[in-house]
Length: 376
Length: 146
Image (cartoon, rainbow over all chains, first blue to last red):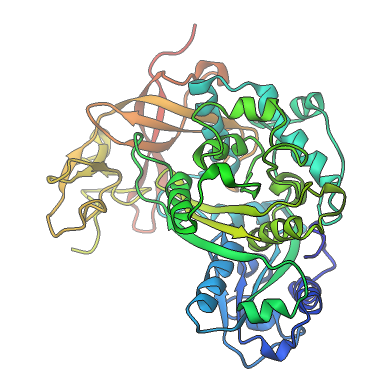
């Protein structure tokens, strides 16, 4: 993957070239063997004007042509959806070696333009027309959870501290500076209880993965990472007494993978604002309802804890170029499993990993959630 | 019939299918109720996503009152909206659904609280090219903190 950040001077093609060729070189495959490509991107049309054949255009400089190239768009879960499709293509026997790419240019000279692009990930006739704000959506969820379970502001801040601690150890992260609980709480209030340092930055980046048959993977000469399952789900007019979309998708993923949440040893999850991680710990079954505060207080989810979460720095510190995020999440889990995570390496290297990536908002909940479970 | 929008006289809703009523002075929120499972949806819709059968939905006038389930007052606003920008989810009374709404007529963030009673406010948003009033819905606290 590229280092995520504000890259006004880099084009979509630039952000595609670097990770694609890095993945090809690292995997020791002959690029002619790549037989299909899924390219995730959410907002290039609105930011750069490139519509309809983004993948084909972005891969032009990479040199991959003639194979089927599918453009994948699912808001902030575009990257994960590209991964999901690549997995299905290989698992079904349609493909032997698939490229899953996620690339985004979200930062431009006008913040309003970027925010307007993000705002299109809601129903433009209903909530979108009324001016639903994404930072507000997450603030509301966290606020309701605090009311119900007594989460404290310090606990919210601790997630941001953790993710910035990890970002400081990750050369690919947009933010590589540690912060304190006080600094997080004293930073500008965006939407109470979410402060500036709890939010993820606007930025650009690209990430690439190769998914293939076991035979293809063996050529790499590295620890094999198997995809146990990849699940995609959508919003469903969820009532207040029903499981949330993330919980619902995770139950399916655990069932298909044949594991339970306690077996997960590393996770990359969608901290759209850092405190949302706490809700996800519960929804993904890492702890019981209302117990996530204790998890962060006890240091369980730092890279040296019992269940490291977002060792990449998460969206908060690594950044969130929407289309690239889903792919970068898988990359982090794979690097951890291979012992290639540098200073943020989990010891011993984990064997079972989970990725959760979400996007958009419809009828009061996240529009799409993808969960993948990997094993080495 | 193509559209779920209830149009009458000289007004159109900001959000299709959200409002019902003869004229601008007496508009209420409009929803759809499934006669099989009883779920109520907002705004109007043609079918029940839970049952997915051919049964027609019952158009149901929704309560003007509700309880604020969660809210936020953001210091930034989406393009075209003034800051601060208040939004929330309101659980409508009388078995109504949880709906998203912008919040208005509150005196400072401290006058809003999870659990506080909210009441519907219909607002005028200008005119469309055919000179019909564009009408939107908002919610405001029933009682202001003294």
